[in-house]
Image (cartoon, rainbow, N blue to C red; front, side, top):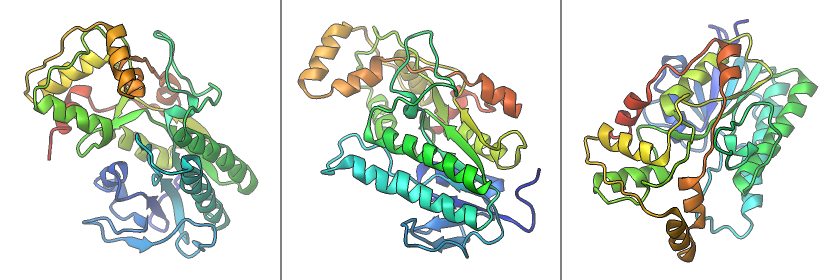
Length: 313
């Protein structure tokens, strides 16, 4: 099955974001039509569009084979919204479902939705892994809105016959990364001593290069339709391991020292950073064997090389 050919096109949302900007660097997206509020730099094909319910996107989706929906209200660490769940639902749930329904009505063949592994929960017991068959267990407004979007998308897919592909990544890193990973880069560059040496966890991550590769595979792969795929680098790391590899990739000295975990928890809790401790010390591992077998795919980029890319301007 060929969903994208000379007579059909790819429509991408979120072209200005971290993942979207990396997708636009790939040859498969050179002619893609980006829709949204702001035109990406260095990309010619753009049309301003809103994903609100009142908007009519039928003309945009004419002759479209695949929609890749990346745009989202991202996870915000210190959200100041009075009703954050409503804000997430407005963009990540209602906006997504409106976009998908109009795509289905217009005859789009496949809709690729970038969700999050957080729809399954925040952590796993060490040695246990999230799988595609696990039940929803979202813990915050961001993941709740994504889980609700997944459920609504499946109803639209069933009703209109549009193929749905859901991809659930963990933390995505790479050149231009923001958020907590960018903060870790800054601390590493400043050679700040980090008290993570006693943490013994395992976390799955995915480089933006590997995620882009999987998305491109899902555009036309005959086995991708109506499937949910988990993705990672297939190389899980502890927090100390990540810090050491990141320092080595940037040619900085690693300054990780052992520190009692209970004391670290107490200090971060007192200053209102308990959630930071949980992310630093908790495990969250993903089993991607189904993704690899269904798509005959494996992550093509090594963690070492992707960490080096994190230091590029």
